[in-house]
Length: 499
Ligand code: ADP
Image (cartoon, rainbow, N blue to C red; front, side, top):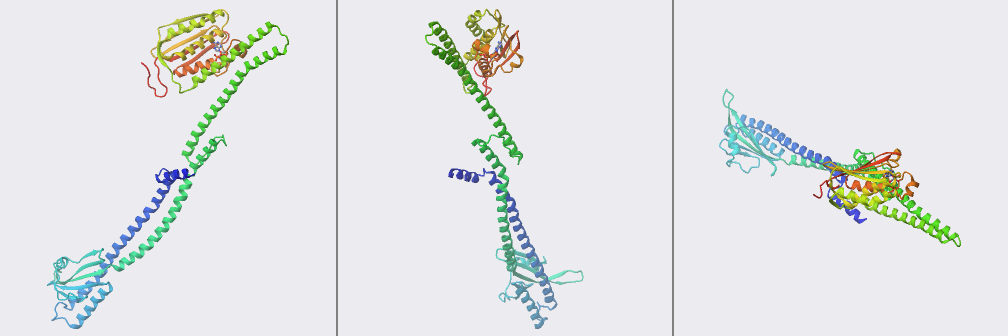
């Protein structure tokens, strides 16, 4: 339980969870534009508010400037006391209204009036003032850090009829940006509040959406768990997304394959049990009937005992074949590949089998087109050849023949076993490689067949990456052809082994 929680937590932290990724994406898409918008709007507001403030103050200063000129403010001889007082009041009013300070400076850089009454009579040497006096027009400077706006306004007198003017003085004004800042703060507070509300909404939305969007994947996991636990064997279906559809399809195909494997295993176990039981039943019947007869003659004992021995032999043969088959089907089993002369191997096998053929008066001939050397597993190839030739002898007529042919091209060698035997009915041809399949059960049993020989043969051929084919006409004979590569290629890597 803690393990699972820890694993989930780790997946969340390392962003390996799809749900976390969806959550983060929705969160970013929702919040980043909000924050950017707030900053953009507030900055823009500040810029415009400062510009407006400057324009309004400059306007009022211009008006006062004109009053100054019309009342000869700079010439104390010409101006009267009363109008000076009016102008001073106007300047006071501006400085009060905008929480600032206005200084009127004459062409000699002397402060004529200061609304703070600190610098009157003093000289001002400031670059802006000098430039303004030189006729460069108004200028302003916004110091955000210290919270003031400074501006210079020229007081210009028209000099002649050509419209030119002479700057006779400058108004140096600095006003506070406090009111702008407090409006901005109020705006910012509202925006932050709205932003936080939106953020909460977005977090909730991201949580809900990330849960909803990843739900089909959870459903896939649940469905697979059901099958894994063994509660269901049915194909699962989660068609919500194309992606989940693909996962589920692949899983269903795997399920089908596993079911097929399971069915074939069950069938195999049933067949094995049946095949092993038959000789045991015969042995029991024979033994029981001997026991039932009191004073049975010694010859009868002998005869029954011979039958019992032959049944035990049969049981043995089935077990031996089964072991060979199981060994063959173990995919991990390595082939013991050696380069050997296939001609010599065939000669050896035929030498071993000829006595059996002689018993049935079957003639065995070997035709080799060329000497063949191939990279093969000697034991398994011997099994292949022995099984095919043995079958050709077993399922033959009296005085029949078996022909073994060996040929090769530059890639493969072919080994063909033809006979003049019973042949195989067409509808049985596709079944003869199945385990325990026999065309004629009773006949096959009579001659000691277990129905496993061709299954073993086919497995061994496939392990060599070869093929086996059969042609047969019922009543005329059969011909099995095995085709195997001369050089061995490993199944997993496709890399050639050996020479
Ligand atoms: P068995 O051990 O019974 O011979 P196999 O797997 O070798 O089993 O063969 C399966 C069946 O195929 C046999 O029972 C037989 O009916 C048929 N068969 C195999 N080879 C031949 C052949 N050369 N001619 C006719 N029938 C054959």
